Length: 178
Image (cartoon, rainbow, N blue to C red; front, side):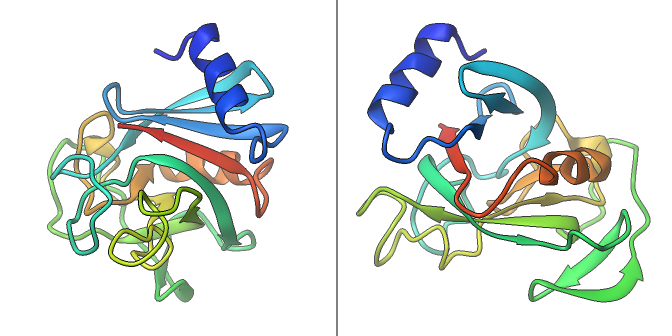
């Protein structure tokens, strides 16, 4: 759980990047929090990478550290819309509510594409979150939320990512605590 002290430290450490609304992803608890300045507005259950945390290219791990939203994609699409190459394909997915893997890692409903803000950590050759196509996005495997299950992205329930999409804009600060 993020504490007031944690929030104050992040706000001080990343003062140049903090935005009025910002996102804190906590891998240990598999939760994502939307904050307005120092106040938690909403908390969501998520899934990060099955293989854990790491910034290396082709690692299939969730990158840690300071990020910002580079693109907000899909604002006009229906719940469950399938995206391929960041483009809606005009089909919606069947959402699995049971805690079973479908064998797919579909990108649904909305995409918040992240870019790293820390050179040689999550930005630059071999570690670049943007080049790795790291997103916050909806999933067809909602029954697996609350446990690691992705290929590196941060997965959310489809209605949750739609709700989160509303206050978020390009440049929104995102911190992923590994």
